[in-house]
Image 1: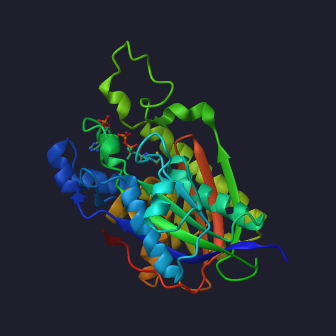
Image 2 (image 1 turned 60 degrees about the vertical axis):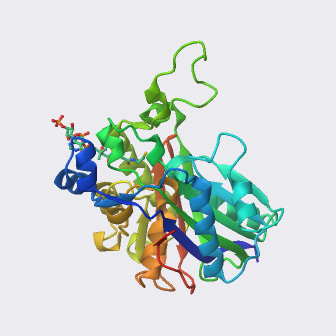
Length: 338
Ligand code: COA
């Protein structure tokens, strides 16, 4: 029988500082009622100055290892678009901090779809025999890239990290990743981006606008693409793995906006009470959002062993991806602040 990647542990964290909608409304022209009704977000957590993405990733990784009851890892994949620095990648530093020795460690940059891409990359490495145990971490600190003048991004994004340990196992055992659907459309890269800091940055002889360091997003267009891409990707995956929509116990979609999640669930014919909502407490945590939502629901006993879980994510790139698994019997700690 072929080798499959099986979920062995999950862990997640958000930094301690909670920023509620009322606090934001003192910084910019917005209010709690607008944010809640248009996004579903009530608060988010922002990292303190001096805290980097790798710091959050190491805590989430540690919790996933504890959840799995083993520190044996031979590859670490960190999905992030907000690395500690441009070079080198942050993953080797996280591996070192976790005491994993000289494991393969690398970053992948797929914005909010990064965790699903990380799972797919890990599953491929396990299926091919390149690795037996892969720690996949999704972590981002977007709070340092938010333009305080831009109320469409500043209200949405929060910081956090989530991790999953995958081990080699059998395709028919609980926790085995059942399949993937991945895609991208680079012709729409301008819909969400940080223009500065890369090799396309304007010549140093010309002044670089301060706003180039910030994330900008064309919210309405992103909203429409998010609904279409997460819906079609999920539908393709369900068909590929022969799961009926009504057999899905939990829809774990990327936590950007509750209206997006409910619309995708409607399109798929998945009842709204099966949609995992965690963004009310943490906002959009980008690559961390799906493992954070899973850890939150599993630690609270909402997701139970044997439940079918459909994950789908969408973000800048444009990039999207879906994955599915039947939940295994694992201990998952709550989503705690560091
Ligand atoms: N507080 C108060 N009012 C706001 C506001 C805020 N934070 N942001 C926008 N508004 C105002 C606008 O100025 C506009 O006012 P007007 O009608 O007088 O012109 C009105 O609210 C509607 O703005 P609009 O941009 O159409 O809002 P929206 O319903 O599209 O919501 C987002 C904006 C950003 C919440 C929404 O588009 C969204 O969630 N997009 C997807 C984000 C996403 O998925 N990101 C993940 C991938 S990167």
